[in-house]
Length: 316
Image 1 (cartoon, one colour):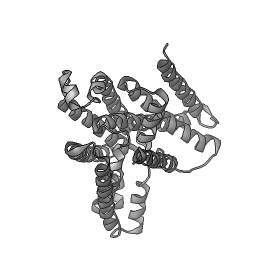
Image 2 (tube, one colour):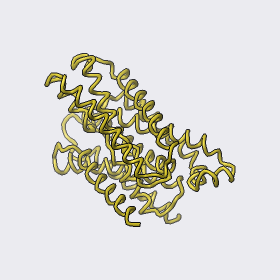
Image 3 (cartoon, one colour):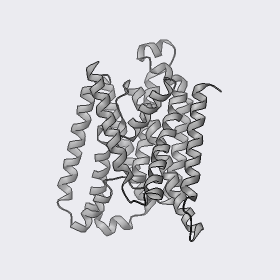
Image 4 (tube, helix red, strand yellow):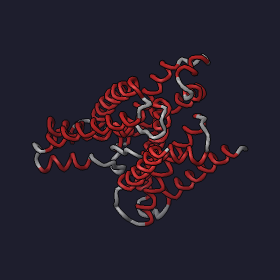
């Protein structure tokens, strides 16, 4: 077994150990009911973490820049705007009575459409201009947050509290039916990404080089972009926005494995994402007995890493 293969196996074993501990640590009372709740939360943690890590590696390949993450272009702000508009149009009771499957499909569809249009327009112009891309993403995020804030001021306090809960990722209220659909869709997207991995290695060399080597660069980038949009849209609609988780996972995978092969980076980033969320939730719930929001901690360290990477890039 090669060194990289051993590292991937090690990550898998650590994740398997955490899964075992997450399910059985401190188990008492009605075990069947508790195991069902823990299983739903565990699968949602793994799906969201894996999707964030894999999608970020793919997005960085399309953008040809390792400092970017899909969430930097205001994806979280768009999700909050959707939640705000739902509550404003349907009201708090109407939103709560909306069928879970219909709401999930609506949110996922809108997010996928917006992500495809937004990512495509940014990358077609000049993906190499990181400063302009970051500024564009920040401006789009500010615009969407401004629209959300304007609508939120018109809501009743009880309705605003519903929107406020959607501003942070939550793994405690995931619908089992939605989770099955999301897991199967993410698994299909991941399988397609792994199938495209050899061509993505060539595409990372640049458009002219890739086309010279026989890779259909433009269509490959479009398909990859759709995979990214699907992964991020589904995971966001499932639990809420986590902006910098993917950047944290992709950066750790590149640093630890020191390779540019997508067949390795994609599963490694997915494993690190799942490990990050499962271990964090395990520490908060089982060891600290705390209700602290895991997403807040992840966003803090992910945002700190983003600043470090940008400042390091500016010095070179």
